[in-house]
Amino acid sequence: MAPPLAPSPPPSPPWADRLAPRRWLGPVVLLGPAGLWLLLLLVLPTLLILEISLVPGLRLGQPSGGYGLGNYLQILQPIYLRVMGRSLVFALGSTLLCLVLGFPVAYWLALMSPKRWRNLLLVGFILPLWTSSLLRAYAWITILRPSGVVNTLLTALGLPTQNWLNTSTAVFIGLAYSFLPYMVLILYASLEKLDTRLLEAAADLGATPRQGFWKITVPQTMPGIAAGCLLVFIASLGDFVVPTLLGGASSMNISRLIYNQFLGPTRAWGFGSALSMVLIFAVSLAIALLLRYGDRSTVTEAS
Amino acid sequence: MPRSLTWPSLFTALMYAFMYFPIVVLGVYSFSDSRYSSGWGGFSLRWYRALFSDRRIFAALQDSLTIAIVAVAVSAVLGTLMAIGLARYRFWGKALYRGVSYLPLIIPDIAIAVATLVFLASVAVPLSLGTIIAAHIVFCLAYVAVVVSSRLQSLDPNLEEAALDLGATPTQALIKVLIPQLAPAILAGCLLAFVLSMDDLLISSFTAGGGANPLPLEIFSRVRTGVKPDINALSVVLILGSALLAGLAEYVRYRSDRNRQPS
Image (cartoon, rainbow over all chains, first blue to last red; front, side, top):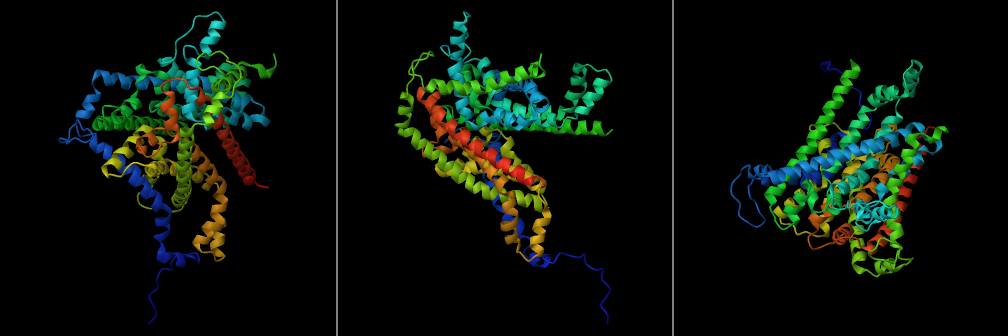
């Protein structure tokens, strides 16, 4: 009896039969160790702080009561709401500063710098990122303190001295300084891809350089602007070093508040975990907004 | 007026000055003899002498180097394997896996630090150098994987298939064909992870306990109370070290870019 005519199997590469018996082995070896590590030391811990953030008044070494939203309600007290607001102002301010300071730099690097030196110039601008962020913030103490470099210069010029250290001004300067290279890097990548023929066409049709900039350059690089702003916003929102070293006691932000709940005198782990969840939520929200915004812009491009 | 002297070029020059001004200030003051006044106190190497006889700093540097080298070595393997696995296989939950692999780049350090501390406390693992290394591997492997993934996208998949067709086992094809092609990206990812590990303050603070004292913790505990001239000298030494690393990284990138161009 002839065997029933089966549809011939798709032609498989000659090595497929050697792989088949151990098909699961490859994925497990390649993805298993890293996945396990992330699960154990990132996913589980995050779920754990989500859980203890729901235990009001949890302190280290004390018996805890049942679940509740007490830790989150505590954040709504005016003193903590001010901390949240200040964190937001720091992040928004430093994002705006980085955009305003970084855009002309990226523009010059991408469109106006001598082509031969372009890569070297870009690397030169982001080189300070390779040095310790702690030491870069510390350098600003030397510059901004009452007897520091800025005031020495101001005195030499006969101007009144400024006391910027331990104020919000110092925090804004420090954050902008820390994250400006990221902004320039992202804007550069976006501006480099700009089709300059569009600008030439606009100029031929009578547009002024200013009109060309606002009607072509800025809209064309909007995804880069959005991505750069998002990155700086997230980094500034969660920054700890700059507000601590340059901002003094008056510049308490969410990271410092969380730090104090765990390594400071209060040891309120439940409250600290709730604050951490709020920070994670804020960052996720910022990313979701970008994704949604990015999608919408591609939709409008397509239509 | 020459074309190069438009306002963006002048403004850019100003921003370059802004980026390097603090570093120059640290360098200049590290050679100044005076401790408190901002004026120039005359040339002196006293802060460098103080630095090089400071045992605490060297112990801290040793801790930091141990953490960074071990964490980066483990991450180089785990991160590279993960990037290859993500590029090669389709499986249920892949989007979730990929999303989780990006989390260490997105979640603020303070939140990761808190979560790790709470987790380690809940499973009663004593804090030590080992717990810092374990925590550093989380973000180091994520950065290695991101850099390697972007390189994987530009690779020719036919090379590996050719090796398999010619009788190589999958392991041989991986080690002899794929890994050499990925080597520049792996090295670049490792350098990035190394710098981030050496720079990390928060995650180390939360996972160190009393068992270890990496350099950022030592620096932080000294400078939070004000200006310390021997830290200026330390900054100069560390900046020279990072400049070396940065030069190495750029050289690796330059070489791999040149190799990638069709001849």
